[in-house]
Length: 537
Picture 1 (cartoon, one colour):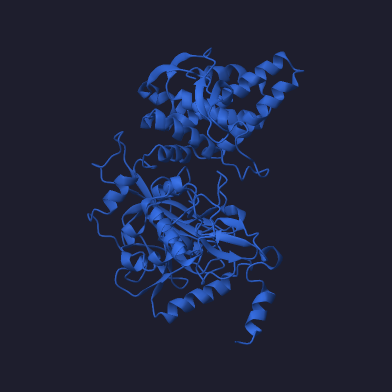
Picture 2: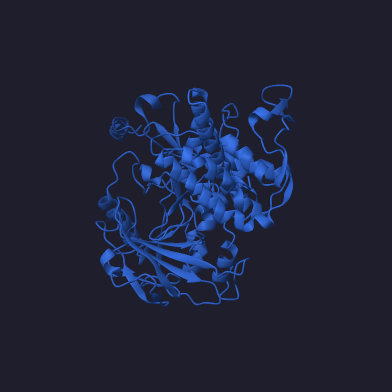
């Protein structure tokens, strides 16, 4: 693998498709920039160098108890970087190991396939952090070497159609992987290996929580003392409205501000780390194929034109009008840095970012990239529905520990599948805002684990989430007849039903095919009207 660049240089000219050449060049650059500079830190050893599903033997008493018993084919053994073995195994696992659901590549989950291999390897033979840092580049390099060598073989045997068939899944994997930011893949691999996904996350949050700086309010109300309306926009919230009906931003705005007014509050607060169903279109499917439903910022709802202030010193990093429907509209991103004595492990300055979304583009026309901003300085104003992405007026405030190569935008909603990664990329912004935590989390206990509950994957549950499962099962066992069995190994927390679908509390959709639901659905209008008109008994 260390000779990968020379292999590509030799055989890449035999690939005549410009798009494919560009993909290979992408991974070649990644390997040159990310692997070679730290190659001296990578452990050396004797490696199998060809770990794939054709080189293992399995044994066991039945089809559900098979385990790997032997590894075969030692013809490729060499001395090399130890991390190459899991990288090759992950590359092979990707060949046909994921699905592409449309021509744009959405619906793929190649990173999850690779992460499963990495996790299993790490459990048996722990990887160092430097090795994890190179994994994504090494996986890409192995696949690039395969397609380039295949191109050479085809030049020797142009009539061999089998060679074309065997290279197809490798190209599919490369195209899918090329859509994933390298740092995001790195953070996913770190997470499955038990490390904090973003290496500098704890440094940044530790400094923000240290009390060394006095943050300024980002709006013209005191978020620590003034009456605030904590809004529930979670999956189970009755305030969200129908999922089936088309989204109406004007109606949503009227309903939301009526709630704030009725409670005699000066602002509404949309919570961090809350799963929501309001993100419905395909723009909320990420490059790894997962639907994004986890809100990773904190919203402050106030009337349009309400002013926005910088909470701490920084400089303008990104300014844009992200004007696609349900995007941010006007967006400002500030860059901040930790003190000079708080560098990273390599002695480099640590930067982090704050994002302000759903603004009026005209309100920050005076800002310039690189311009210094002081704490308490007015930087923009909230936009109305027609300029803020079609949302009720508010500011989406987010803390970002790594921009993943972005400049003028950053997602405000993460996926449940990679929730630990998104929480590390975007930690709780209340560390800056200072809203009373007891106010933010009031009522969470009534949701059987609160907004962080998720039961789709028991292996990934945090302590809080497992407690939620336990509480849910206690209520179920106390309330329902034992004859009503559970079909899923890990219980599903069903939070909502509408149409022919059920939704768990992370926003995952299930087709409900029990009894009459396929015929009339949940809350079918005619059924609801009939019940309304039914005389009371």
